[in-house]
Image (tube, rainbow, N blue to C red; front, side, top):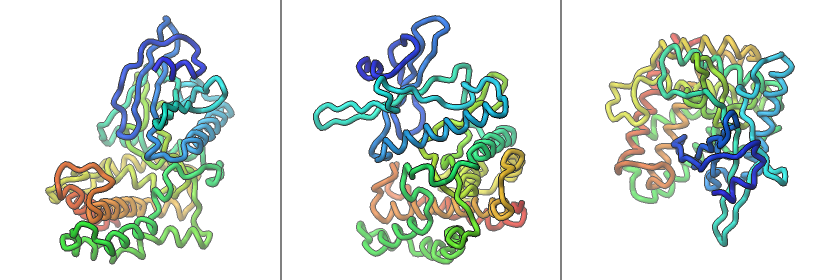
Length: 355
């Protein structure tokens, strides 16, 4: 670890790495300052099984953070270093360090730690409104950055036609003989195919645009200051081109769901309209760049993301649970049913969710 840390240009000495549990993808460590008043840092090993193009991934983050920092400077924002992430370069000017030991290849990066900040997993109407305002502002600051400035850090991540193609291939193979359990769910997915691919069609006709999205809009992907105000959007690994309403819907899929993502009791699953309204208020207050069609498509984004996740869970179940970690044999099937129920609840509430 000392060899890894020594590759980066740190402003001061740091203490031994302290493992921290942040997310499920990368390995993360705090590097507390070893000197009074010095900077602390955040070290991560990048999971290159998920992010195959590490160079592109890090370039995306640099482009996005540089752009946000420039916009904040232009508006006279104060305390900018606490409001946007800062990557630490290596001594040879790279944004990551590649450590090779025989066949073992590891990719590491370091951020400057934002002191006196915290995150939360709790979604309330109050935190949802703050999250909506923060993610709306994040998209607004990036709204003039051409969507093709970035690469897809995970190709086809929110691509519905691609996800349906994967499902069709899984159905055709029926690799582990599970298709018999899925007839009703497949029918519910098939009847909605045309509607859920609507955005791609409108994009190809030039009626919808793509923008830079966060693609993981959870309340715990933002930092708050000591007073509870939003400071900084974090976890930028999935920042890439997409439709803005996918980010909107991604938050609602978990944040405005009264049940769990894998709730076996479908009666628990409803749309939390208090959270929905609060996030929407905050989001629209910041997302002043929206075109009329983008604004009108926000509720559709909620249904779209629930549908996409149902497709992904069902595909993995039919394939024999090769992607998602499962706790029991029918876990992905239970997840699929829960996402379909959420979609049905969103459809039932569609008039109330109109913006």
